[in-house]
Image (cartoon, rainbow, N blue to C red; front, side):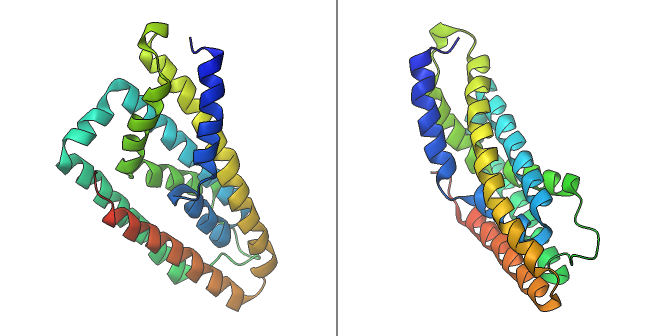
Length: 206
C-alpha cells in the first residue's frame, strides 16, 4: 500500500520530528519528575495513542474542519489550557510523590498524556500538514495510509518521550527520599505543566 521508497523517506523525517523537543517531550519529563519512571512511560503511551487519534481524524477529514472553524480550534485549545493548569496546581500543591507512599497510578498518567495530546489542536493541524505529503491516493485507501504512517510516528514518539521520562524518573528515585527535594521536583514539574499551558494559550491557528 505504501511503497518502500516513501516509507524510507518518512521514517527519518518522523524521527527528526520526534527528537525535536516539544510539548509532548516536556510533559513526559514533568511526569517523570513528579511520579517516577512508570508514570512517565504510561504518559508517553497515552500521548502516542492521542497521536493515532489525531492521525485518524486527519485521515477522515476532521482536521480540515478544525482548520476551517476558529471557534472549534479555540474550544479545544482552552480546554487543554485548563487541564494543564489543573495538573500544574496538583503538582505544586502535592509535590513529587515520596518514595515511601504509593505512586501516582500509571493509568492516571496514561490518561493525562492522552488528554493533553487530544486537547492540543495544533497536533491535528500538524498531522494534516505533514502526513499527506507521504500519502498517495492512487496507492490505496487514504485512511489506511494515514494510519500506517501515524503508527510509525506514534511508535517513534513513544520510544523517545518514554526515554526522556525514564531519565527524569531515575532522578525521582534518587531524590524522593528527601522531603525538600520532593517539594522542588513538584515545583519543577508544576512549572513545566504551567509553561505548557501558557504555550498552548498563545498558539495561533496560522
